[in-house]
Amino acid sequence: MKLGLFLISAVSAASVTVSAFVTPQISVRPSVTLSMSEEEESEDKNMGAQSISGLTSGVKTIFTSEEIDAILPHRYPFALVDKVVEYTPGKSAVGIKTVTKNEPHFTGHFPERAIMPGVLQVEALAQLAGIVSLNMEGAEPGALFFFAGVNGVRWKRPVVPGDVLVMEVEMKRFKAGIAKATGTAYVDGQVAVQVKEMTFALAK
Image (tube, rainbow, N blue to C red):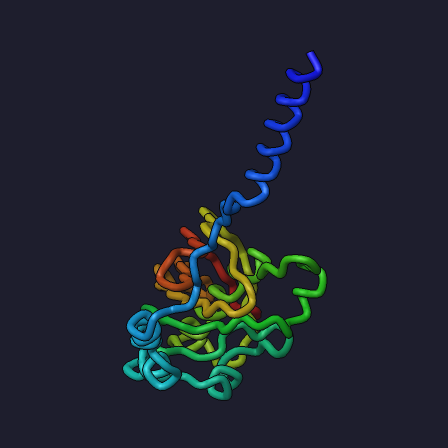
């Protein structure tokens, strides 16, 4: 019996001794270092500031910010059209609104996630339509005009600081001081807001 116990102990000891020399299985994480070809490919995908800036080289300014101030009565912090890049007198216009985090409404809308209020997006479209309206016969640049109605408004995506809101309006009617227009605004080619009908009344 003692011999049996001795043999078991000896075998166990031998097993432990042998196991101590077993090469451990080490999992090696793949290297994240890019090869030269991968680095070159990554660099090739970068356009650079000059090329990115050149994407809008064919877009011409029709009305500058200063010229818009001579047409619209709106001033900071409620001047929402930075420039006009397309304009057909009495018919349509395309305008730009650059959205920045320095605008005062972002302190409360919302502190943790800044989003341009939808009503200000509609107001920006209305101001662009006002630029067209106030250059039409029967109106006078600098005159006041008021919202009389808005129908069919649809918001499609949030507008946030850093976005460039590209707006387009089309006049549908202008008679006896009453103007009607439609409008759509885009960010990166995607619709942000659509307005089926905006109605304005020139102040008397």
